[in-house]
Image (cartoon, rainbow, N blue to C red; front, side, top):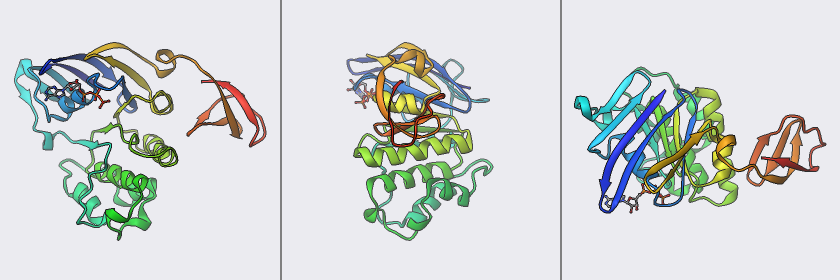
Length: 259
Ligand SMILES: Nc1ncnc2c1ncn2[C@@H]1O[C@H](COP(=O)(O)OP(=O)(O)OP(=O)(O)O)[C@@H](O)[C@H]1O
């Protein structure tokens, strides 16, 4: 279980949020630009010190202002992935990954080879970040965060700087990560498609406040969409391939589904 509560004044903006997320799934922070999503992540990561905050990840209390608990950011065992990959440009992909690996403070549960395999970045190890596509760069950034053995992964709009094709590619890897490692993630987005595709729990934030939370299916309006069947029960809708039980059209067939 992840528990977050934060009250903080940022200039003229007041952040006042409280939510819980599942222990091994993706909690989506969803809301328009300027709603306070990144400010919330900063409190969770310990980069921002709110006047009044509680951050609990599993058994660990990372911030509890009432009890004067504040674990330093580098001791939180939290991995962060930003919109731009922020890799070290002078280091190879392997050395960028090694940076994460060396930052481990607890036991190692995620293996070096395993992370590289899930993210399919083995062939990139000797390259410079400058010679990678945007999607590859993001996969390496996720790998670096993962190899530091985080108890929680924060993803702040990790695909919003990518074009549609690359976006789909990276989303596929984030979904694979979720399946493989069962690591809790806080995923910030204002894309309904990403929220539906990855979210187990959705927290809607507007103007610094939580205005609703629940399953993505319950929180987002149902849409009738046209997609393309890609296998039994699987339909491609735009960038996403979604599971739609009961769809049994031949691959390539155009189908209408509720999503
Ligand atoms: N240090 C600060 N001083 C003053 N205002 C701030 C500060 N940090 C953030 N804000 C304001 O707080 C509000 C929330 O910002 P935040 O970056 O959390 O939004 P967001 O939901 O992540 O938006 P986006 O989707 O555009 O990234 C914004 O109005 C922003 O201008």
